[in-house]
Image (tube, rainbow, N blue to C red; front, side, top):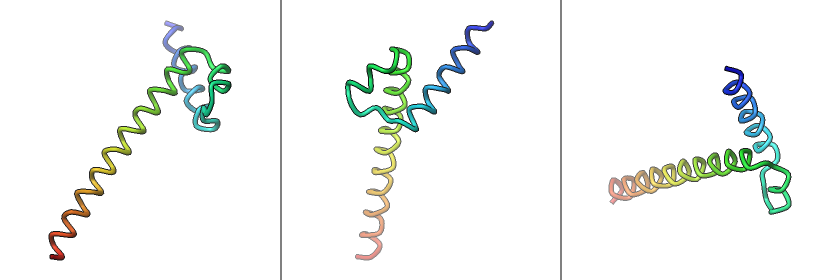
Amino acid sequence: MRGPQVFRKGVEGTHSRSKKHPVKSVRDLQEYNKGEVEVYVNKSKCDLRNLEEYARALEKRLEENEVSHS
């Protein structure tokens, strides 16, 4: 059962490392292994989805305010 714990520690370490040092270029990507890059990409996709949802919520609130002030 060591595999999942080792994997989890690796993922957590990669996640904390990617927060401190975001990947900005191909050269940065070369420092990471495939698993680390996949974690970073998945985290970035999740962040993007969250931002899109937040933008939609803000647009909805703006429309509601415009209607109520008309």
